[in-house]
Image (cartoon, rainbow, N blue to C red):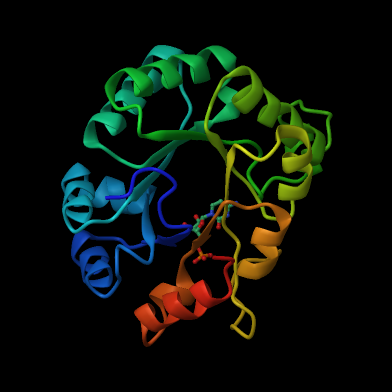
Length: 235
Ligand code: C5P
């Protein structure tokens, strides 16, 4: 398993059960893509699935977006690092102390695991933020939480929209990982993603990794879809 930068294409295994996730994984090449395990699949299938994916050679992004008191989030991140996952994440809005505790826990157990933060969910707009007492615009809040997570908290990067990536690169420099969902290959069909970007444009904007789900998992030939996307990525 290449735990360092790893594959720059991450396939979202958004499935309700282990069998469906494993049958998709069987059709994918761990040298060509990593996989993302989110809430639905992890709650249904548990850490055994993560271990099975890793045994197949996949780098696993455990997308559980932790947000709780520092001690609890640190313990959850420690458990993820013990599993040996490649990436785990949390909500930067949990605050600096929570992020530092999580970072220290990961480094202590398995320093190769990357800890990244979600800033503002792309489903939140200015009205959503006002509703929870935040008067800043989404863009200002993203930049504030990015600074807290990466510059002050020492985290390895962020999950963000590729649309936010240029401003984040300008603020944070080249080093942090910027992992971007909402990617649609050119010429694909639409679904519930509203503001989408092609793989090429996402990397040009500063993404280090892209997350792609349905354009691959619903394709007749998922491995072919992976290859087609890889051809749109810088080498
Ligand atoms: O199928 P699709 O490519 O839309 O899947 C994208 C994946 O990235 C899903 O797992 C989704 O939950 C996740 N995601 C997203 N937008 C965000 C954050 C995460 O689509 N802002």
